[in-house]
Image (tube, rainbow, N blue to C red; front, side, top):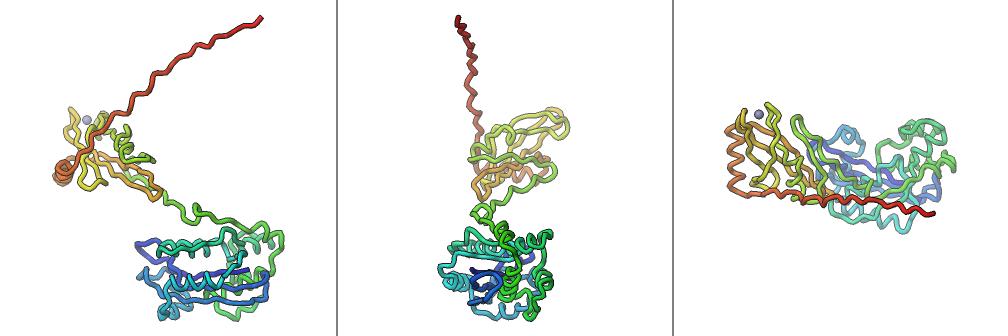
Amino acid sequence: MIVLDLEFNSGMYGERLEEVLQIGAVKCQRLGGPVTDTFNAYIRPRVHKRLSPGARVLPELEECEKSALTFADALESFVAWCGGETRFAEWGRDDFRILARCAAYFGLHYDYPRRCLDVQAAFSRTLEHVNGIQLYAACDYCRIPDSFVFHNALNDAVYTCLVGGFTSAEAREASAFTMTDEDVFPVPKPRKPRRGEWRIGPFDSRERALNNMGSRRAVCPRCKTVSRVADWYTADGKTYYSPFSCDGHGRFIRRLQLVRQPDGAYWTYNEVVEATPENLRRLSRAEAAQRYSCQRPPAKPPKRRRRERRIKRK
Ligand SMILES: [Zn+2]
């Protein structure tokens, strides 16, 4: 069995990535030991410039910063070290996922384990305690001497292996979980509409998104009179404009932002904006660039009423 632990930096701004800084792992015949082999790699950080609060307190930061090892090299050696092993464990459910996401970020192929044991959950189940016990607290409970500093990936992998020795077979059975691409690489949800905006979707094509009657709805902000957009104008294929006016309240502009999600679905974010000089400039730039004429949705086929004939049998 292989027990994995990672240290990583989530960064502070921008890029959402848990950048792996250390891979630590042990091989054992069973949880509780004996440990038959160890793996340790300090990785030089290269994505995030700033450290997240969790990363700032890592005891081995200096080792990572002076390491020459890239994530790609570290992952390759880790996979080679794992060999044909098919049983995996970790404290919680995050580390293999983080490793897989980091690999995907760097464009690397990594065949992450599809099944893994959550030692933290197994320990909680054994104690009939709510889940979420910290590793150091579990060690303390089991009276494992804290000879090695915590939050070093290799040390934490050793501790996880040792604490695992205190779990019951039933608890381990109940704490194995499966990993699929859907939960390792979840598709981010489309952003929430801002105040004054309305969101419509998902659509399977750009045309359907732009033709949708809800996307084309233009409401006068003063009297709520509704009209429909007939033509969209865009300069960049992302923000679409269309002028409209209300008899009583003058000119307004419909603005539509077309967003394509990583899963390929289109969403529209819609709002009515005032015809300010700035907005009129944007509109005329779009009008000069590209027009999209909306199509009426195809007429629905007329419903046929079928009169059921009752055949009475005598
Ligand atoms: Zn009006």
